[in-house]
Length: 145
Image (cartoon, rainbow, N blue to C red):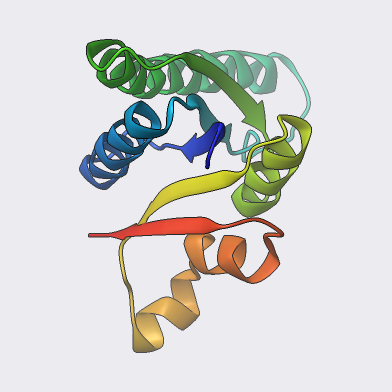
């Protein structure tokens, strides 16, 4: 039924839980997992050498974090014999990056974690999962934390 599953990850315990579910599902379906880490753009644009050094340090740190998060997903997939491809992209809006990748990779399912925030906390912080659910043109499986 599913052939390509997009799995956005941020390296959290909740993302790991979603990865476990996605890997099990992919194994049962003979599907491939596309792991995705969306990088927030560098939060400061300035002038001079300090800005360039800050950008380099930020990108080095975030690339290492992304690499660890995707390596975790790769390990889960390899343990189950599931095909895996990982990617990082930079977007100001994570949900847009997720949806763009799902379309570009021709995914037929998105599996992602959600903290399940409610009330004022959800209004203030927003929810990437909620935005993906609202705007996705394909099935989305949300693993609640």
